[in-house]
Image (cartoon, rainbow, N blue to C red; front, side, top):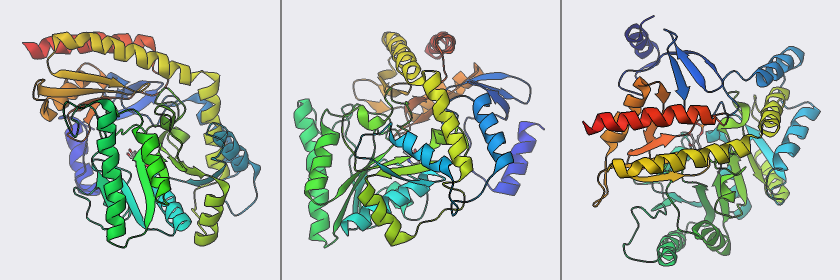
Length: 423
Ligand SMILES: Cc1ncc(COP(=O)(O)O)c(C=O)c1O
């Protein structure tokens, strides 16, 4: 079916929803980092973090098939699988995170995290950043409002060094200015008689545009939150599972969250998410909510989740994300002198953001330009996107199995694209 026919049918059946690119792509199959359209045109996937161990990974497919054939029930029976998976996942976390709740989507897990924070503290007030996305349920979606309007949520400017709160200050001073915003939010809840519950951040501020965060902000913000009786939640839905060159994004800026939310890559495509915290927090959440989720904590989630961990560990994908991410960032940085639009090349492991601007001096965000880059790269067979608070960050986030040979193909196509847009 042609793209235009499929698009018309889709809009009729599903309603009009957002699609990537000027001309949408119809993907019919995938293997590793490669995707193919209906004409067998090949694309190198440099966007999708869900298939972290690669599209159609044979070990994951085998585990899924075997478990589906053997047993697939909900969690109100005893089964060792989910216990073993939970334990193995927790072993990758800091020691104090020793209990876990499984869900199916990032949104659901953020809901669990918010409920856990609110039950544990008896508070309601949650601080988030002003350009975040943590999910789309009625409660979680309140944090995506611009500006946030529900009085039980309060947003602070996300910490960054590129468009800082104040120019001409040291990194420490800048960090303090952002910390002041956290304090103001805490005070504001107190003024409004809204008991404080905590703060949630994506550990690498992925949706904000992967900014460089003033050193020390995360750990000092966590300390302020705890001193005010709240808990600090790290959203690892994008940042986790080796993406950042560490197992968890919170390790990149060395802070200790009280609650961690995980999602997207956990099941390589099978809906699987989780919240980890200490035993007391999880026990309190369980006793106060009686939480149950039909498809979560199942033998199926356990088998697939285990298979994903097996591949990550056996194929050294953490090392791969670190070394290939560093290589990509270094090589992209070398292209900056030839292209004024590339104001900053930022990286966290195998996640690169390029700040695309119209005017480097005045830092004018060029959303259209970043969108154009994504479209031009698609024409050349590479799937990337644009994102960030201003939509002007070229977002490069391939599956963890992305290799040097793919990076080299991308880099030469990217350099070619830069020459074309110069003309
Ligand atoms: C940081 C972050 N948290 C949570 C979510 C929500 O996850 P889901 O789409 O699985 O509900 C997203 C989704 O993009 C996300 O980027």
